[in-house]
Length: 397
Image (cartoon, rainbow, N blue to C red; front, side):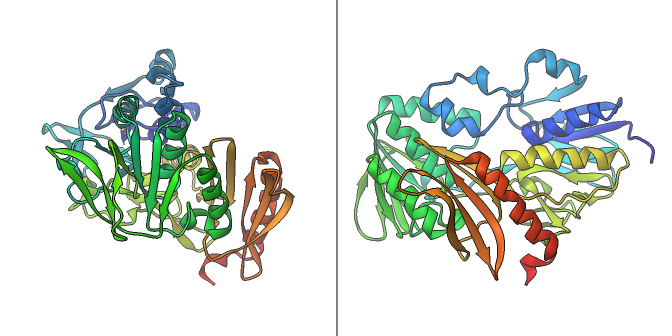
C-alpha cells in the first residue's frame, strides 16, 4: 500500500494526538493537519474533574505535550474551528467558517458532546463538564458558592461530587439510578461507593428523575426531582451522560449509530477512520460492536488506526479498562462489568477498603475490579482474557 501523502485528523484531543504520534513513530513523513473546535492545544481530560477542578493543578499541567514535542510532529494545528461537514469520497472537511480542508486520509476523533437538561442553557449557574473551559468555569463557580447539586450518578457526576466535598461545599447528588455507577459497575460496588460518598457528607437523592431546574432572575436556584423535594443550589452540574459528537457528519453517508460505525480495523469508509470516544467498532473477539469512553482506549485504539492507515491489517480487540479516583478510593476495572453480572470478592478485605472482585455472567468471567488493589486487579485481568479466548462469542450468547 502507498503511504498517504496527507492525513487530516479532526479532533486534537488524546485520541487524535496519539494517532499522529503513532504515525510518526512508524515513519510516516507526509503532511499532518489537526482540526479542532476548541482553541486549546491537546490536553488531558481525566484531570478536569479532579486535579484541575480542585485547584491542585493549573491549566498548563493538563496539556498533553510540551511545545517542543508538538513541534517535533511537524503538524499544522487549525484550532477554534468546528467541522460542520464531511465529504468522504473527496476526504474533504468543511469548517464553520467555510474553509475546506482535505487529506488523503481523514481520521475522525471528535469525541463526545454532553447531554443537557431542558431549559439549562437559559439559566446562569448551570454547568456541564467536558472541556477545559467548562472545568475552569465550574472551578470559579465552586470558589464563589457554597451549595452544589450534581445531576447524574455516573462516573463524572460522582467524581465532581467528590472533588466538591474536598473543597468543603455542601453537595447533593441526584440521579435516576438506584446507586452510584450502577450502569458501569453494578449494585454491589455501586452501593459501596455510595456509602463512601455518604460518609464524606454528600447528600444522595437516587432513584428519582429530575423534573426541572428552578431559577430566579435568570439564575439557577435549585433542582426539583419527581419526588417533589426541592434541592436548593448556588450552582448545578449536569452530568447525565454524553453522545458521540457526530452531528457534523449527518448527510455524509457514513454509518452513524451509537457513534461512527467502523469495521474491526476502525475504518468507516475508504480512507476514513474513527478513533476514541466517537468510534463504534466491531470487536472480533466478542462478536459485537463496542464504543468505549475512556482515556486508555483513546491511546490504544490510536495505535491500531495508525498502523492500518500505513498498510497493516490489524483488528482492534482490546480488553476494556477504565479507572476512577474518588476520595481515597482508586477503582480499576478490566473487561465489561455490568449491572447484570454476579459479583464475588476474590481477594482482600472489603472492611479494610482493599479488595478485588470478579464479575461473572453465564459462568464466565466478564470483568475484574480492584478497589485500592491495582496490581492484583491487573493480575486477575488474565481471567478475563482467558474467558474471552475460550468463548470468542461470549457477548452474543
